Image 1 (cartoon, helix red, strand yellow):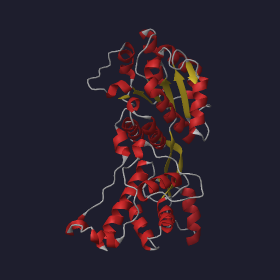
Image 2 (spheres, one colour):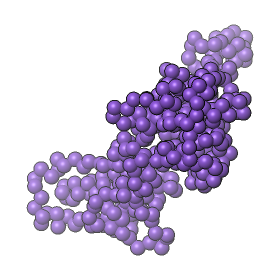
Image 3 (tube, helix red, strand yellow):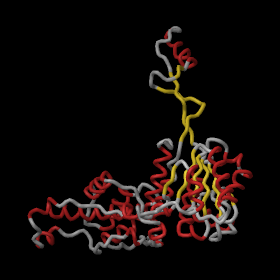
Length: 378
């Protein structure tokens, strides 16, 4: 029976790893929960094992389709009356033979080695593989997985202190006289229990300006997906795209359906995959939408720096944008290439006014941006 337990553990580890590769958040605790679920039912019944594992490993409706595909790949397909499961992307597939839970007698007949109980199942995930993969080198299946990860990264943003305060249990913050007097009524007017307040935090406004010219085509759509997740998650977010002219796409990127939102934004842009005029586009941003940006916003500019306009205009507009913003961040996918130097006319002109210069070509670089924002942009 010990060999049987080792084989089941290995199968469950492969199942959990396959679901993780498909985008489901699972850990060691979920693997132990799956073990307990199988122990509570007749594990020799494939239907019962399917239902028990689905209850243990699926926490939301979106996980069901990934579980069905991972279960079929690990234990073999089961006849179902519901709609067929989705096909796992290539990056999330595991090469697993389609066999069921082995019979203990068959395992004993296989004469497994005596040290089989020391085998520790290992989990594989495509997330680590995709983390440093350039967006331009991803396949369609890998891009589908990357879009889900990018939307999660967009939930992490910068905060700032608000003028409002909130109750605090920590002594030494601002004294809350009103709450202290109210609490003293329980003790005949004696302020025995003092109350405190501390400054609250709120989201800092963020402005995205994305280059959708021809040189940025391999990265533009993924970066627009990233912008859409920001617009859908927060209120004080503005999104713009530019090629030869500036287009505001904040309204188009709103809504719950990210694919439909990105499609609306693409249709609203007339110069997608065209030329580049960074200086002229920033001039329109500063003069037409300056009030929407306001002081205290974090401006994220996504461009490779190739500019056909005049460098003097670009320098003036970047300097003005820097003065009006809390922090100016430039994402350039070319920065990730070995030996890259900012030799283009646009980058040489803008870099003196940029606070943070990042790559923005992969999931890892967007995570670096998220950590920078959460850390206070220091």
